[in-house]
Image (cartoon, rainbow, N blue to C red):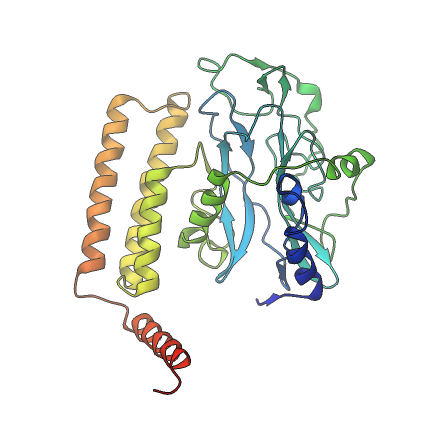
Length: 330
């Protein structure tokens, strides 16, 4: 896989600086890839942790190591009354271009991709704003009704056609053939808000977790969804990623640490599912103890005598080349 940055990409990048900040989210930076993303993984939606949070479905993003999965997560919207239009990959002039998601008063076009949990390809049927509060359709989304009471049930929006299309891109060979409706076209011209800081952080942290790489998980990420942006888990993953890039962690140490984090996350998801989306006080203490142990292991592995010599030699060569380019007279 390799990226292609066309004149269209340059134009869109320049366009970002010419439009108001509130509407920039609708402008895709045009990251283009020659190989399409994997199919969407099958996963369960964790229960909504806080009233007012909205579901943002998981998606395949692209980085230096190829496609990686950004887990679906419940997030706080930037303001009352806005809805999330997911991003999507679309076929254009021989390459797959990513169109970034955004917040707005109405749901726009997201490629006809069936992300599930209310995002069935067109619009969103998992809930709606009623005044200043968001009401959840529990026929579609997972909500702990003992904690969140602003709910309703509407099963008429559920489409049972026997098969679920898990294709994750629009157009091109094998892609979804959907085109924007009149309403979606109108929504695209409205004022939009870019992804929140929490969403941007969530995507970045997903990009440094090797367990999210399609080349590692073969299209089946261990953590496909999260109840909220997990700061403790994110910090652990960031530390592991820095250890990998610096060469302080060997491939074996990295694999062991990643598996350890995945096991903790799996245990947390199972405990939450068994307790209506919450952890008991004892479970909180147990998870904290496990994360403390994992944190100490990360520190030990990064500071022991084992290193990834190939990575360190590469980093040293890059640093030397940079120094020579800065001071050619030396």
